[in-house]
Image 1 (tube, rainbow, N blue to C red):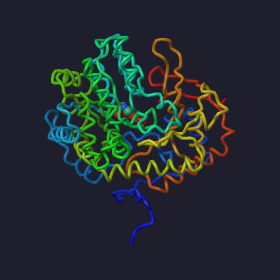
Image 2: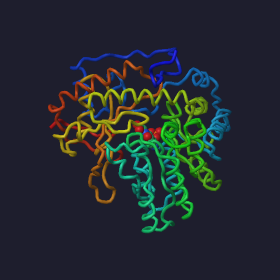
Image 3: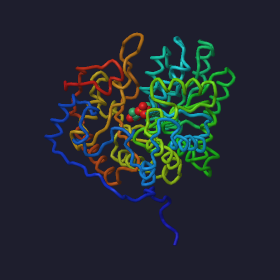
Image 4: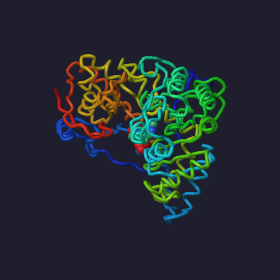
Length: 462
Ligand code: F0G
């Protein structure tokens, strides 16, 4: 019999073998926990959290195969067997020639910035990411955003809001000259835009322009498989290609990559810097010794390298990605039905609530996204995070706050961790908070750390 449905479920391609018990809290307990945390969800204790959507970083569930791999750790200081397995997983799935492991993504960002950026350099990119930009600045460079304008508009339904604007890039090259631009920083699944993809076509155009000017493309491939899934869904000619082959095609259009394997690659810790240029690789493998550890372990145990090697393979599986993005979409659709303002199209790794539209009575300097994240936690014990003015930080030259167009609360979904019923709880909580939104008060910042302030800043209710 022919099914009446035109779409099949995104159901998970795995079953659950072990569970971690969660603690339920009362509203009174959560109120105290928030005060203790200075209204910053990063400062909450995990034991006080019911559903943890702070981040998808290092929070995914490893498979039985990955756990089995952990028992095969070869903990030799040098030349561990797990390193060679990891190296071949990078070659096979991403195609980059050389790789040095690092303890996580920012370890790779530090090294690539140090070896490629000179003071006074300009690094164009498709929207900033907090740690990436900071490492570029610490190396003496200045990040310049060249993402398309649609990316800054939460309501634009452009299918590839991660695309770069070629005109912006070209005019930067004209103004500064290619000698001052060591590379362009291209992220797949642009995090700060709401997990929005870049198209292959745009990447090809960027490649063509940068090649002409002898500028390298360094790829932030933290969520490359999720980006590949959107290409498969939305870009002409890719419907019948596997995620694995699209991932490889994306990588082939770039000269190297930094990776936080804590996301796509399904591990709790790990990352790497991959490069195609031998001389640059030699520099990187020397530099990694200074900051991370020998070039065959980069701050990781052998067992972590093994889990990462296996996770990389699992991460580019079509069935895995279909369910992963499907679950995010499932939550997003419930929000849209409840008329809650979120970034559209729904992104790959989480739902991004538009706090400016949710709380139009608050000014941006009253930290609406920070206040909303606190309120969601108070309502249900669901932990989210601010991605707005606090995350954006201050201009390194003028010291002024950046006022980003996007003032968002990110509900980030860890991979393979929560169920459909958990997503229902999250949606119900958001509906409740939305219903009472007019009562939500703004914050003032009472403690502001110098670097990456969103992690440790403290607030008081106005
Ligand atoms: N690039 C992107 C796009 C990221 O999302 C992250 C981390 C990094 C680089 C840095 O990697 O944390 O392994 O050092 N993002 C986390 C998040 C923190 O919650 O989005 P890391």
